[in-house]
Each structure stands twice: as C-alpha cells, then as structure tokens.
Image 1 (cartoon, rainbow, N blue to C red):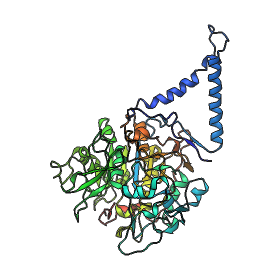
Image 2 (image 1 turned 60 degrees about the vertical axis):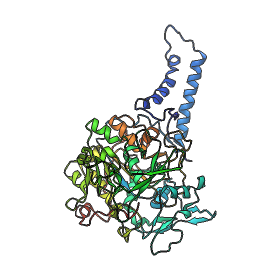
Image 3 (image 1 turned 30 degrees about the horizontal axis):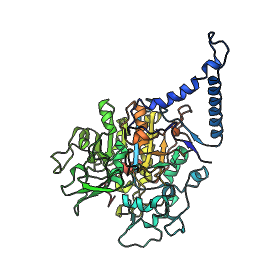
Image 4 (image 1 turned 135 degrees about the vertical axis):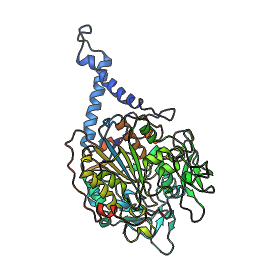
Amino acid sequence: MRCSWNKFAAEQVPSGRRTHSMRTDRLTKVQDAFNCYGPFLHPSPSVGRSVNVRQITCLVLSLLFAIGFVLLSMNGCSIAIHQNSILAGKFQHIIIIFQENRTPDNLFHDPVLIQAGADIASSGQNSAGQTVPLTPSPLGTNYDLLHTHSAFLAMYNDGKMNGADRVPISCSACVVANAQFKYVNPSDVQPYFQMAEQYAFGDRMFQTNQGPSFPAHQFIISGTSALSATSSIFVSDNGVAPPGVSVTGCISPPTETIGTIGPDGKKRDSVYPCTEHPTVTDEFDARAITWRYYTPSAGLLWTAPNGIKHLCGPNAPLPNATACVGPAWVNHVVLYTKQNPAPVLTDIANSQLPSVSWVIPTAQNSDHAGGSYAVPNNGGPSWVASIVNAIGNSQYWANTAIIVTWDDWGGWFDHVPPFKIVNDGKSWGSGYVYGFRVPLIVISPFARAHYISHVNHDFGSILHMIEENFGLPSLGYADAYADDLSDCFNFHQQPLEFQTIDAPLKAHYFLHDARPPADPDDD
C-alpha cells in the first residue's frame, strides 16, 4: 500500500504566493480543531458538567482523526504535516549536491531499495503499446538523449507516459536498440546505493520544470526561471549560441538566444539568456547567512548565478558583457581551478564551510551521458561520496544536512508521471511545471535510516527546507507550493553515526585532478 498526506489542508493560495507567516495557518487550524473539545474534557465551574452537541461532535471527529492516523501508520504510509516541521536552526550547514540527467528507474536499479518498497520499474511501454524491458548499460555511454521541453512533451505523450522511444538520440556513430530504456549497471553506482540504503531515498522527487539544465539550475537556487520577478513567462530550454561558443547566461554573446514558454504552455519569442528575479541567496545576504556556489566555470549552463543579472553583475551593459563582476559573484561563486580543482573539499578540510552550499560537478563527474568525458567511466558516484565522506568524518557531521539530487531526467525512461501538470493559464507555474522524477538522497545524522519517501517533492522542497531552517520568508515561487522534506528526518532519534561510503575514487583524486574542468557537450 502506498499513500501519503503531502500537506494538510493543501488549499491553493488565491494570489499564487504564500508568505512565511501563512505557513503557520494550517497548523493553527489543526490545533484549533483539537482545542474545540477542551471544555468537554475540562469543564469550567460556570459550565458545570453539561456537554453540548458541538463538543461531542468535535471529540468524535478528533478521535476518528487519531484512529485514522494510527491505522495509516500501521499500513506503512508516510504521514506528515510539513508546515513548520523542520526545526528552525537545527542545521548549521545545508549542502545541495546537484548531479546530472538521471531518473530513479535509470540510476537506482537497486534490489535492496526495491525490496524495501522503492518504486523502480524493470520495463516500460513504448508508443506502439509494446512492453520494453529495461536493460543494463554503463554509467558512461557514448550517446546522449534529448531532454529539452519538446522531449518532455514527447515522453509524457499527453499523460500516457509511453513516448520515451520518441526521445531523439544524440550519437555520431552508434546504433543502440531501445536506447532510452536502460538502467545503469549496479556495479557502476554502488556508492549511490550505499547512501540511499543507509539514509533517506525519495522515489517521488520531481524536477520542478519540464526541460533541461539551464532553467533547472535557476529553479534550484530561486524556485523559478521566470524572465522577471512578476513574469509568467519561463525560460524553458538552454541557450542557442553561435558555433563554437559554449558561454551562456548574462555573459553570452549578443546573438545568443534562449527559448521561453508562456502560461498557456506555448512557445514565446526567444530572448537573450539573462533573467532577473529574486533568489534565496538574496535573503541570505540580507541576514548575513554565508553561502557559496561551487561550479567548474563562469559561463557554464549549470552555473545558475551567471543567468540571473543581479547575481552575475555584468561588466558591461547587456548584451555586451564578457564577465560577471558583481559582489554576489565575487564573494560567493567559487570556480574550480588547476590549483584548487575541488574547492568544496578544500573548504571542508580548512573548516571554512558556509551555511549553505550548492555543489556543481565537472562534466567528468556529473553522471551526464554522452561526450568524450563520459566514456568509459564517469566519476560522479565517487565525487559525491568524497563530499559526503568529508562531511561525515569531520566536525560538521553533527549539524549538517546533505541533499543529493539530479537536475533533470536526461531523456531516460521513467514510468511515473509528474504528480501534477499545471496548465490552467493562471496559477503559478502554468505551462511549465512539473517535470519527471529525479533521484533524491537525504543524508544527515537526523535522516530517517533506511527510509523510502513516497511523498511528492520537487526542487522547491529544498528551498522550503532552507527557509524554515534559517527562518526566512518564502520567495513565493516553487517553494511556496512544495513540502519541506521533513518526512525524511526524525529529530527525535538518536543521531546516526557516520559510516564511510566506499568508493573507487577517493578525495585525494579530486583534490589533485589536473584535468581541465570539462563543460558538457550539450545540455
């Protein structure tokens, strides 16, 4: 049996925004409901021992609520009132590790997780109605799959989820049968399996957007990829640059453009790839909360701050900028260099970890399919393990939460449809949310051990968790409509003792990697 109460009384906010204070309203309503039978249990002298019909009704309903809660819990259901359930200030450090382009069906073909109840498929339907078994493949492949917004629509196929075979393949000299219907060889991703088995694994984590990396990385830092603070038009794809140009964002060449989509789900005019809207880091700066965005290079399409004008601080009027030089960029964006190829590991070792970190991999360590960097091996699982081990074996373990997730589905088959498609033309996100599943691992001494979360999460959930932990107001974007990952934690348990994750490549390898940080071949 699978069920969950993702939110209690999850009514839509009419304005399309939810303030921080509004998060308490629903919990207050629950408390009020239970308070209604206080006079029945503790009658005052003026009331005597008389009991009216309203009090009896409230008592009965409350008892039914409690009985239902117990029965659902006995059936293994995940029940959580997520509002205000992340304890404020519980974590001094939150690390978001953002890998590339995988689904649970593709990356986590783990018999232990499946036996524990994780929803992982071994076959899928194609557009001809045929059942196609998922077959094993190396993590590093010589082909890639399209994962643009058009590829999302093809695979979703009006909700039938049988269009994966229509997702185009990018490969110059290869023929792969049923290339979309693959799962990664378990031997290639054992570090991921260890983390997911020990801590909390989410099989209902969805990317918020319906497209590739550039907008996805904006969602992970701000909950939106809208053109402006109040715009209902989203950046929906990656930039289209002149031949030979790999730079994007607010330092793109003047002729680079990027696709957009309106609230009706239809394409709008392409624009210069530089947005301007609030981010959670704005709240950090206002409250002196330290943060860093670790990323391989400035113009990378995975480097979210380069696509948001006030985070970049272009060195010339748009569209003629060639570098980001603003204070947010200079003080908080940390680029990988030959002298320091893994700065997040260096900062952990030097006791300089900020309160909130986003960690972006090089292409070689990203899990991204295709490209010369992905064959024959990919360092992603070891890269993530090196960061987790560095935290786990340091003083930071006691007060840190590590969130590992992937930026989009990468074009791979996944059998679970988005938990919600918003297309009414007026609600927040209409036309572009939500996307397919991506994996999620939550690691912390307070993570629920050996736990499979069946609660719907998305990138907004991470922002919501951060906001509750640090006492910040809601941005009013994806965070305002998401849970807060609280079902993945148990703050009453004995803190988990860290066990080192075994991985083929150790931290020393990444700290001394002399290869230039590679950008992705495409998206």
